[in-house]
Image (spheres, rainbow, N blue to C red):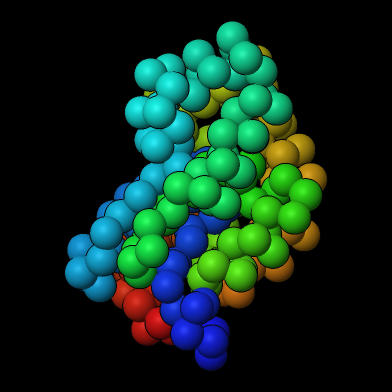
Length: 172
């Protein structure tokens, strides 16, 4: 973990949808005996709308504004684990804001693995397309350099959530 005591406050999990951020975030928080937050859940609770409903009725830019409010104004003071929506860290300046507040861990998966993990989920507005594999590939390519700039990057293909959690815990 980073050396400054402020950076030991929060553990942010970032990465593409379907990489395991929510599952691993919960496991990690339980193992470390920390509170767990999910940016998408916070937004849904605050707005009383699902993420797809926000995208449809208010647009993606409004959703990104809500993500920024969550990170800049709504985080608890205590140490905790936070699963971030897939596009949260991609917005200009957001990765730096996350790094100022804690350690950023990127969970990475191949496009084929992401398709496999998300194929039965209906609340993925960015995947509402006839070719999800192509869309995931495009998104990953566009976001790769930002995701790879996290403090730590973990490949999740072929690993169980428990294995990934153990590897993260080992570097913390």
